[in-house]
Structures are given as structure tokens and as C-alpha cells.
Length: 374
Image 1 (cartoon, one colour):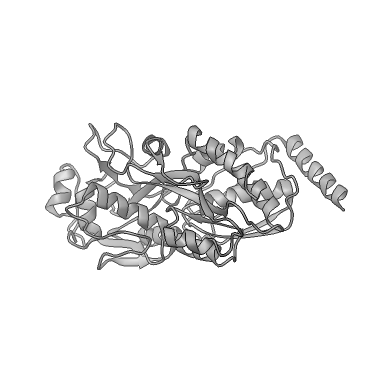
Image 2 (cartoon, helix red, strand yellow; image 1 turned 135 degrees about the vertical axis):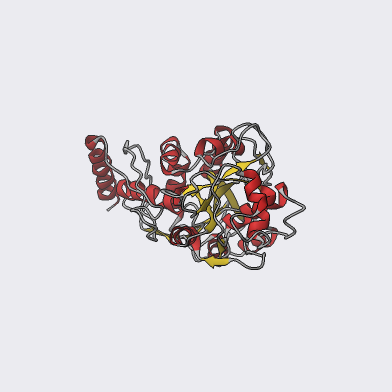
């Protein structure tokens, strides 16, 4: 049986190599106006260089909806090569970490480093080990809006803080006019949308507001939305869908969910406002520092950067796994999948799906850590 399984893998890899350029489409779980749940398509050519080793069976995973489009694209290529079925729910960072600490999934995705209490909970399911975060992708949190006739909009951190705290409620408010003197801003109520579920995207977005506008954002932050007012929707895809269909709406979500939508340029204090692009987010992420302990590689992001063309509203998504004590029936497939997505082939997919690869000096440490998982 083992020889047959290896032969099947060899045939699958050979078929990929012969085909030369198999199209890979990232398929999100929710329809936001396109084929990938983000309003568009993304394709890459498969090189057939995935190492399956002893990967087999099925993996259950859950967590960050921010990375759902990337995970779907990765899974399609990995499953085609190795025959492993991976079911990633994308129910949000909070749901993913909870599922992991309850032993329900092989790995989880989260857009925030594990908290001490989450690490403690993980020790109950990681025999002689603990849950660790492996940074796997980054990207901009785009602030999308639906304002007919206004294709270019500039906002700064204090103005964003007041909008999402329901203290600026109309699009022709003087604070918005000051930043956009040439825009034809309508006399229209602002419909500010936030996440209804616990979300690492919310955590990072509010960390930015707290760091860059401390006098205007007084909330402590976290995965759960704390400000009063506004409207709510679940997951990044749901939030983007509400902004698309609501006149006067504004919301925050990963760039891959903002295809075909106008997004805000941020006045950071640099010489020019900065747009939400993969390249601009990469400049900000490159300033991150590893602050995790042990094998945990959690990062500290600089939300107040004023560097030219550095987009400050960014997140990094971590795959959470046991450093020791992974279940023996899922460990081979988990390591093979993580090895692929952290490798050059997996990371090269990201920019084509509006995500930012992890800087080389950090992803190199991730690769080393993956090989030591047990």
C-alpha cells in the first residue's frame, strides 16, 4: 500500500510537470462578486515541486478569514500533488484559536499573536509542548468605501478613528473636506461597518488606530469590536459584501476582498498619502521585529511608520501549531503543507493574490521551525 501511494504521488507530480502551467484559482467560501470570494480571479502556474513525504488523509483547520483566499489557493495545489484533503473553514481568528486549543483542528490561522492564556490552553492538547505562531503571510488592511462620484479619498488616523467611533457621521464633514479639498463630497450619512465576529483583522485595525490616533481612539483593542454604533457583518467576505451594496458605506478588510472597490489612501505624515498595495504593505512589514519566545515567531508591527510609500494598516497571519505533541495521524500532512506554503513556491503565490510574502530573514526561521515540529 505504501509503494502504491508513493507511485500515485509520483504520477501526480509527473502530470503536473508535463502540463507545465496548470491554472490555479483561489476560491473563497463566500461570494462577494467574483470567483474567489474577493471579487476576482488569481492564477499561477504549478511547478510540481511539492514534497509530500508521508502526507495522507484529511486535515481539519479553521481561523483567519483574512488568509482564506491564500489558503484556498495553496490547498488546491497541495491537494492536487499529495492527495490530502484540507478543510479550512475560515471562521475567524477567534474561532480558529478556540478550535485549536480544544484539539479540534490540526492547525489554526490567526492574525494576532497568541495571548498567554491561549498558550496555556494549548498545553492541554500539545503533549509536552505548546502552541506557537508561524508568520506565513502579510498584507494591507484596505479601508474600502462606497461613495459614487468619489474615486479618490484620503483619510488620516484621527479621522478614521472618529468615523468608526460614530463621531464623524456625514461624508461632507469638515475633517474629511480638509483632507479632500477637490473632492465632491456628498451630504450623505456614513455607514461604518465592522466585524461581528472575533477577528484578527479587527485587532490589527484597532491597533493601528490606537497607535496612530491615541487621542481619538480610547479603546483597549482586541479581536472583538469595542466601539459603539455602526453596523456589523461576519468575516472579511461578509464585510466587503455589505460595503459593496450599501451607499455611503465604509469598512476594513484585506486587499484581496476589495477588488473592484475604491479604497482609502492614508495620510501618514509622509510626503504623499499611501495607497493600500502589496508593495506598500511590504515596506511596513519589513520593519517588523520577532518578539515571540521559544519557537514562537510572533512579530511586533510598526503601525506608526512615516516612511515613504509604507502603508501602515497591515496584518500578519500566523499558522498556529504545536511545537511538540502534534497528533501522529496528522503531523506528516501538517508538516508537508506548512513546508510548502512557507517555501519559495508557496510564498511566490501570495503577491498574485494581493498578499505580501514574509520577509526572507523571518520566513527562513519559519522553515527551520517547521522541520523541527514533532
